[in-house]
Image: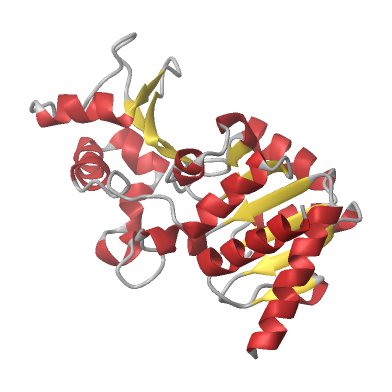
Length: 259
């Protein structure tokens, strides 16, 4: 793609944003990787370093050894503790400040949209949030730092302060269903937007990847910004095969020029 072609596409997306009233942004691993979080499925990702079977809900429920291993991987290694939002997160947060964003639907579990400035009520996390822990018995929620204090004090398996129940990271494990309320809300927003922007997702993990089809069926325009190809490329009004951060930053600058 030439610079002129790229600039033309960036301008077209900016024009769509200015002209739209209900914009949904859908983000995937390609946004998180630019903050230094490896894609779980890529070389160096979780699944190449550990046994995926240890991340099934059945194994977590039934094996204390698996639970201890989980806490070591997810807490002591600090997978998401030291990362910061990148240009893509900041650009999406800027869309909210500009009054252009209906919501963010994300496959990511790193809390970076919220840390970038998006309102928590506008971020629908389809796969949960790694910075929170939930009791499997009473559903009480705790910040990860609360549990990390117990683990650092020598506790091997933290339990709920309220009921003594088993705690687990508040993310969707293999064998678990996606949170129904979150999925329903995401489907509603996708079905009622007039512009659906995909950033950093290959759109192959179901059922989350159905979201663009809900938007298209409702008559929304579709923009896809990702390095890899997707099953929806032929349906996009604008397709940009490029990195998330630089592209989103350039688009928002063009939007500001038109404001």
